[in-house]
Image (cartoon, rainbow, N blue to C red):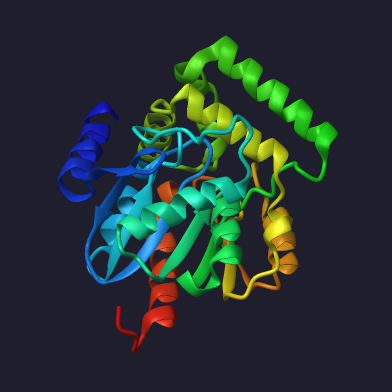
Length: 283
């Protein structure tokens, strides 16, 4: 698996290269490929921009694919507040898209990234042609006692295991039992590159905010979830889709890290979202 992972890293460098932009509150890292109608990909709490590699390679012939490292991830500066909400992440995203001169995009949020995506779409509906939520995490903001317990456990695990230990212990939970060894290895590789400061802030977002605060949308939304996802279950994702008045589709056989485990399926669905959103438009 080390050889295959090295191949993926080589593809990252050659075909989905990293950029670092200086924004008003510090550096912001992203990966970019292709040209055309923009699609913006937001990763989850245990991942990073590189996790979208195979989806990006599948879409870059028809779109400008942009994936950020969320604030505090990779080389991106953390947010200035200790306990950020989704709107704080959305404000950074707005600054990034301004710097990239992206006026309107298909916006995709995976897991915890769904909170940022929904908050951005609610605040800037004119900038989002389609909102796509993949295995969305609701968050625990409406359930503070449960949220506090999750926060305490996550911080304890970070302190006791470190990032490397978390990557070893949690990776298998993010894919299905039938996932390929290469998919599991790529999930682990991405998780092993988390930065503690950014991960701590993301824990605060997970435990202090609620996706349903952003369910009032003026943009078209769709929700997808893996049938074998044990983190955000298919039933949970279906319930969130109903709350957003959005259609829901299963990704059969996929665990939580659906874009890594089933990149072809995710790519096809995002390609359809692009086609529906930008056919006949000028970007």
